[in-house]
Image (tube, rainbow, N blue to C red):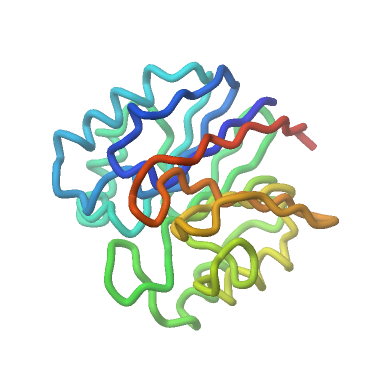
Length: 204
């Protein structure tokens, strides 16, 4: 399956060219502090127009309206599957999506590491793709990653872990068990200077 991964588009999605793919994953921060509901609705229109059979989205620390009304936005984001600490299986590929970051403030922030550890303990061990907004500690994180998330990745060994949040650490890193992708599209100046990450992924 050809998968395209993006994150941190911050209402600049129209600056992107999404190549034809079977699945488009967005790892959160598709709004800009959720200030414009109209722009968030425009994101739904945009993702519905992209050349992918399946679209899966999680949120980030900017999606305050979704945090306030998750079920309402699950219906409102009608052109994609919204994952908020839950799984979906598509074409035999099990995907778990989480919007959590270690931030004290911000939407979906969870500053207590023990709370994050408890949440991440619910991620199924047979997860193929782990899709989070926050980065794991020590991997494409510019020293801003989460230790609890890193321990979880080492435990479940997903074949792909994609995320964003840390704009300065865009890139990929491959280990024996997991391909890590930081797909943050905007840079430190919030300019959309990075390209979507495209890869081929085989179902297990």
